[in-house]
Image 1 (cartoon, rainbow, N blue to C red):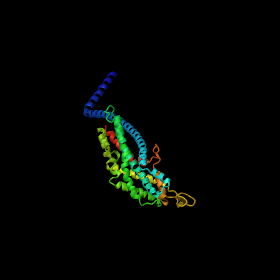
Image 2 (image 1 turned 90 degrees about the vertical axis):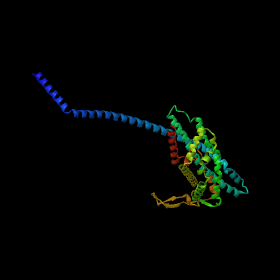
Image 3 (image 1 turned 30 degrees about the vertical axis):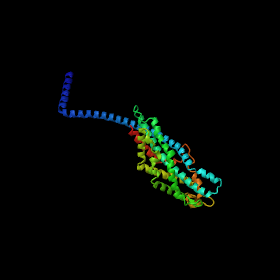
Length: 373
């Protein structure tokens, strides 16, 4: 009896299930499709998520590698500029020979006044040449070394590619800037000296000069040089490279034409103008260190925001003091004498580490690291 009951129960259950499936066949089919789709969709989403993670990881590692490579290239670029700036400074000092005039003055000649007039022109010409030539050197090497860095990076990401930009070609391309160190600077000197003479010719050696006067003189010289059609901002490629590269290797010639195209862009000229202004500002800042109070120029007293006994603090502004122009000339002549290899006291440091210059180099590196792939 028990077995018959169980069999009857099973028959009834299977009959119910069969009837249920028959009645809801379409619904169950749709439900099965939905469940299967959900499983497949989940697996697809998981696979795509893993692929996205792998892609993001790869891109992050590539960006990190590229950033590290650029920073290494940037360090090499700064070291190269500082190294070549020593050679450039020596060439300027030898070409604008202030020391020869100073030596003659030490001997007590009869034409002492004439020598002092010549010295003031030479000293200002020398420091202005340091600013202008330093700017041109920084911009030129920023372009060339970041072009090289971009090419080498792109080559490292595609091993086995045709080594078009060999080490020999890199050296030849970089050596093009030696024209400026030897010849371009000499071409720039007469123009700067002419403008310096126009600005300083009526200033006497006994005339008392404040720091504001010195700043105005440099501003006048800068404006005169920049506004002249022969000025360096209008002739950067010519001053930096001349035309000798046109007779060289075809590949180098193409690279130089690209470099010249960059130098002729308005934004590069604007950057060069900013560097020049920064260089003169740094020069005035260094000169201001010698405009210090003395017995004849006591410190003035101004209200203090600090908790002092009498509410006053001693304060001295450099523009409150003046010195005879003859005493300022030796101070300015000393500018640029320090040129430490770490760049901290280099005369090119004012524009070497400018944010605009760094961004300029980074953009060139980025462009050539992709364009050459």
